[in-house]
Every structure is written in C-alpha cells, then in structure tokens.
Image (spheres, rainbow, N blue to C red):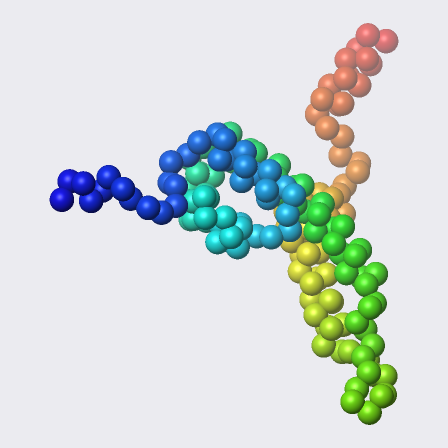
Length: 152
C-alpha cells in the first residue's frame, strides 16, 4: 500500500520558477486563455493550481501580470486582423447568387468586441472607455517642480 503513492501520475502541483517562466512566456505570446492552455499543455498544472500560485508567489504574480499585458497587445493586433479580413464576408449560394455572410460578420464583430472588452479591463488606462485625466501630474513630477521653485 505504501508503494501506491510512489508512482503518481498527473499534473505537477509544485511551484518552480522555471515552470512559472514557461507559463508566463506562453501567455505573453498567445491569445489563448489560461484554462485552455492548461488543457493543451499536459506538463502544466491545472488552471486552479496556477490561480493558487498567483496568490502564494508574488514573483509569479508580477510575471503573470506582465504576461497578460503582452497578451492584450496581441489581442489588439488581432482586432485589426479580424476587422481587415473580408475574405468570408460574401458567399455564393447553390444558385450562384452572391450573398452577405451575416453569420461570419456577426462572429467577427463578437471576436472584436470580446478582445476590446478584455483589453479595456486588463489595461484600462490605455484601452479603457474612461479618458485618463491628463491634468493630474505624478507626485514625483510635482516634487521636482516644487524643488525647482524653491531654488529660484
């Protein structure tokens, strides 16, 4: 009975910086979500384990946040590709009539809207719908200006 635990097979659950880097590098270069990536990568832990790692390992959490920012840039690039792709906008039916492919156009709109929404939530200062108040100066800049005024 003691040997039954010796040869466990399954996904890893132990955190390692190397695996964390691999996960973050893959996220940064893919538009696929973490749940699907975990299903496609058998050497990775489950997405639930990754979420636990985010809570328990601050270095991984920082790397993951940066990877998600890179992923958003990929999604924004995909928005342009999807919007510019008109290859399937028109179809020819069995009678030879050219018709609008409404389903493809609607799916493209959904893909674009989904990517826009994700970008606005993950990087709201850049892609959010609320404009950033440009009149607010960073505190370091304010301190620098005050310091210069004091010298003059």
